[in-house]
Image (cartoon, rainbow, N blue to C red; front, side, top):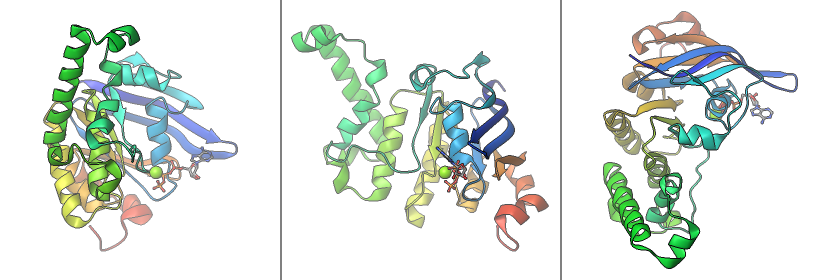
Length: 255
Ligand SMILES: Nc1ncnc2c1ncn2[C@@H]1O[C@H](COP(=O)(O)OP(=O)(O)OP(=O)(O)O)[C@@H](O)[C@H]1O
Ligand SMILES: [Mg+2]
């Protein structure tokens, strides 16, 4: 197992509020790593601080051993981090294909002049981008709506468009912030299989979710946050019987 993404003594303060306190987490190559915890526990804040969207107040962030603390989001992307957001972010007036191609941007090398002149190399790059976009849409099972405007699609499909856009850059780590929010049980089940399929493409997945059953079935390990603290970090079988976790989050009698 190779260490991929690591948060070391990571804290984040917003004024007097300690949103994260001394978090130590290591995510290994090729695992599905879950993050659970009550509302306001610090899950999204943790995502923001390990993807370059925010800078930790204290502590370090490493990607494959490289110190990424205080690096900006563009550098995180270049190093192979891609994410989706808790609140859906699709370009509603663009087609599904267009939305996905946006995620390709960092991999394109043609200059503005080459693009205007439509040189052979620029055309080849464009064709390759289209092929890759269709390939990713196929993986997600939404190739059939490639030409549809994003805002004409059901919510669950829009969520998949976001994932497709993140995937097209072939990230090493994909972070999903509440990907099943607003999905019906069937869509949720589909997404669980899809995440397993993504991991099988050698992409490490870190996922935040409130649906505890989904997480216990899907994840290799789960971190539990509560009031900005790491309450537990373990395999699902141990997390679900951890008394502190049950008290803070899962609730008695539930699974
Ligand atoms: N930019 C910010 N400025 C001030 N406070 C913030 C900011 N972002 C988050 N917080 C606070 O930090 C705490 C953690 O918020 P965060 O969004 O990380 O929680 P969460 O675990 O993702 O919750 P949810 O399950 O509701 O998405 C909350 O008390 C929140 O109000
Ligand atoms: Mg959140």
